[in-house]
Every structure is written in C-alpha cells, then in structure tokens.
Length: 265
Image (cartoon, rainbow, N blue to C red; front, side, top):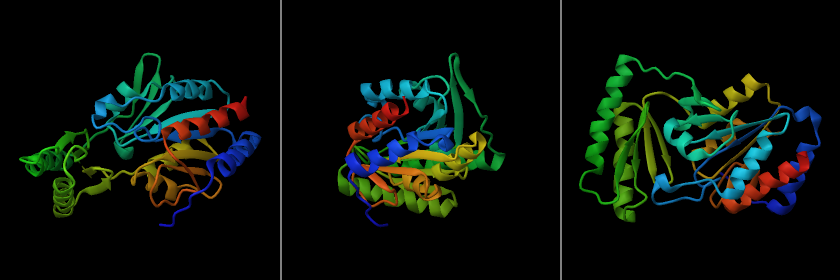
C-alpha cells in the first residue's frame, strides 16, 4: 500500500469544509474506529476512554440535522457500549462487523447474532486451541466474543508476541476461519465479517451519499478500501494506508471532527 501522508491542517480541513457546505452530502455518515482513533491506546483495554473533547464533539455532531454517527470497532458490542460514551442514535458496529446495535436512551437496540450449530462448535474449539496458544506465554491472553476469539499480545515481549501471533494465524488457516491480524492482536472469527462490508451495508441502509471514516489499525484498511473516491478516509497515526488523508493521533482526529462540526453549524 502506498503511504498517502497529507497535511491535515490544509488538505483535510479543506475537504471537510467543502463537505459541510454541500447539501447533497446528506445524510452524512460519520463513522469512526474507537481504540487509537477516539481513545488513546492503553495496555489495559478496559482503561480506554474517548478523549473528553471527543465526547463533546460527538454529542454536538449527533445534534445536527443530516449527520449520523457510527463507531466501528473490533471490540465486542457489550464492551464497546460500556466504554464508548456516545449519544443516543449512534450506531455501534462491533466485532469487526459481526455485531451491530443502535444506542437508545434505554440501552442498546441490538441486531441478533445467531450461530449455526457448526459455527458454535467451531467457536468452542477455537477457545480451547487459542487458550493453548496463550498458555505459558507472559503477556498473552485470549478474549472470547460472541462470534470470535482474539489472541492479545500487547503486554508480551516482542519475540513472545511474534510467536503467539504466528501460531494463532496458523490456527486460523488450519480451522478454516476468518483471520484478522491487527496491532498486537489476531482475531479468529467463525462468522465472516469485516469493517468495510459492515460500513457499506450501513451507508446503503441510511442512503448516505458520503461517508467520513477514520481509523488507525490494519483492520481499518478494509473500510478505507471499501469506500468510494468521494468519501473521506482518514488514517490516524503512522503506517502504510490506502486512506486519502492522515492525522497524527487521536487528539488530531478529534480536532478534525471539531473542524467539521464548526463548518456544519
């Protein structure tokens, strides 16, 4: 992938200002990754929180006519909802697209995820096999989701992490399940899903002519690649990307959202 670094204070600002001025770009779907995009990355995933300025700007965007918010994350839905601090009306896409819900004043309005007996058996097998991958490796642990298991390696020494990730990827190939290798994680899913497919499905349901999507991880490249030339794709942080724009960190991502808010008001 080509590195498409641009100056967020010029190119992205100009694009967001033009987008805000275009009435044909409504409803505008503003979709965002969570960890590393709105919330600085943490060694303890349960400590992740959206930056306070991000909470404010998301609430302001949600209050505007013609704007729809969505968070698109690899986190399980319940975990994402507990940490997100987003306003009612926000769509939550969890587990890389395998789970979806909408935030209401009374909780979550969830789309039901159902596994076949074969998928459920395969998920159980994944749990047992990935537990063996983590066993005896300091800093490696396994998270179980409704449709997947995730091998986390962020707290491990690099050589230990590399070995665990390689073993998890090989396990995915052996069992014939969906495998996503992101930053310090390998996710093995029994239900085919990716952020790009989920994001395009939501935009078509909403009839959104333009999508703004920002993310920091390798898995966000699926979303960047799935979107159209007129959409606004923003890579947060370093690394090769197919996104058209780049910002340095979550603080800069929130500042870009504030630019959009100010232009829309």
